[in-house]
Length: 426
Image (cartoon, rainbow, N blue to C red; front, side, top):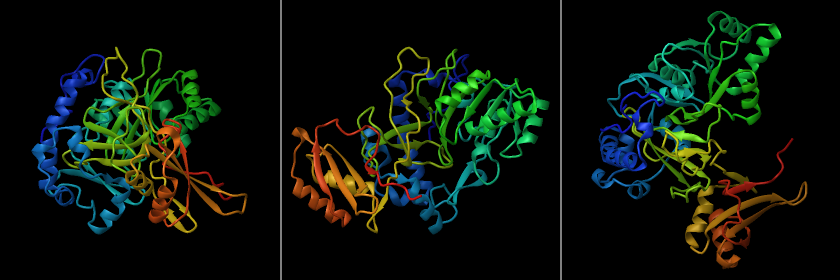
């Protein structure tokens, strides 16, 4: 199987030559590698042998052909692994693995034995790290992949790593003082805790000038606070199954525009509850196809919301950019004892082609009143067959909903298919 993210030669300002390819060259390489990926998954992964039965690999050479394949949802892994432990049949039978790790669920994650398995070196390089730098790694090494993902990437880049893990704040301050690392990796909130604790103890930690954070929301106020302390801290988006998905590449002023997609992936943004790609710039669920031979995930729905940004002309890194993490795509909610799923709203839209987009709003009448459902539909002329659409909604959800129409573009571009506005119980 051809790997379209294989290094193309070191460059001074980018991790490799792949980052500065033209859009056309990148697209040709990715599409040319797709048939090999499909054939590899079909022949070596029991799960994909079943899921892609009848698919001819040589015919999957375009985004349209890829979009016709079924989606594999992250939310399904728990059930798949329970049926066929430990990996649900997704990992090829002869995969060379070094570790088996566990994410909350529990979901078991394979780690290949080769260097830079998670492809994290690219993000660390973009954050400013270079060979010989010492990295203070404050992601957990216990059970979960986090610590190993960043450790693997840093060592592949030629950095040294202090495996700090989480907790034991005062001991971590001692290590920072003694070892004087250049960079921190971990969550932004724990970096703030460490910096505040060092200041309270009167300990100098000015050796820290760079950081790469992930695992939680990175707020603008945090970025500004770190910058005021002399740190340039960027963020990346990664998951325990895919590894690196996208990363920031700050300029000389420490500014970054969106997150740049990793070179070893094909990205789709789809309507939540479906596998249907949305229009460029529209918020939807992040679906990724990975060329990792040890874990060849094809149209893997992460459950995260994001959107593509317009091309950034003149930048040395030419790949697609993401807005970053924008919430969860799984908006399933319970109404009057019945679960309502985004897939059901998507099916209403499918059955009524006059609907361009729909959003199911769940509200409560008063503090103790009944739950109310309203299906907001974007249609031409802000009108449509309300009774027919209401009947379809009732047939699919077993619940009644009021149907209202609005003009195209009137619904918020936030990826929500179900908007539960009921107050959260205290």
